Image 1 (cartoon, one colour):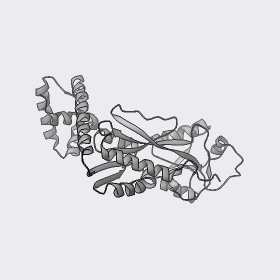
Image 2: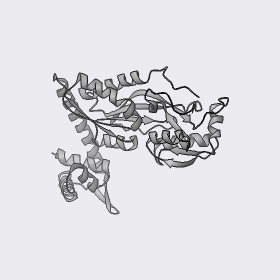
Image 3: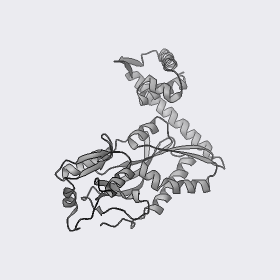
Image 4: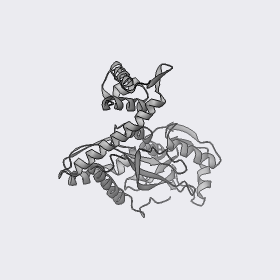
Length: 310
């Protein structure tokens, strides 16, 4: 029989990449993690790790063990969900990660609903970009992630994660001053070719989408401001320092403070969704949170509630 604790350490190594990262995440010493994995190798009777430079990687036999470990952990999470569903009161801690604009626009209302309906549930929210949050969800650092997907730039979908749509969030070109409003979306985008741009950092899905959008319009954007903070993007546009591509969620029910223009068709909205591990999805806390987020999205973002194009 394999030791489940050691199997989980092997799984953590697959998701976190290094013995040091596993040790830091689980509050162990690297030597302790290494010792436990050596004992797992003895149980398996085959090598599970092989050296690569200064690190290690999993052998094919280790990958087999990790796949079975994922299945076992999923069943255990389903058992936990069944137990929780059998109880009258919903308690415990629900760990959520969300990107900035969804956290600002949706989480306060969702938290109000959860507080009213499940006062015994403790909700812990971390602001984190999807590029980090989704792998952390797989590593069991979170129970639910609110993430985004940009048009023409689909995310890789991990088999062990289950996604559920929340809303389509329109994206618009934000300008420091209004134009004459007679140009079409592509022509309006081209007028921003010579301006400084505020964009999200290199390597993010948002940056890839924005750069591709500009290149398809025939120019390379002059990116002078890089930040994942879209409120900073907005402030730079308001002060006349940049143009930016802003989602409607940023207004959070307020009137837009800068002129906005439509983007070309097929590029006008990002998909906002929740993701959970498959074994966790039936848990009453997950279901309650998803319901609260759906209600928050419906309240905050009705279909006819769009900022004016100026």
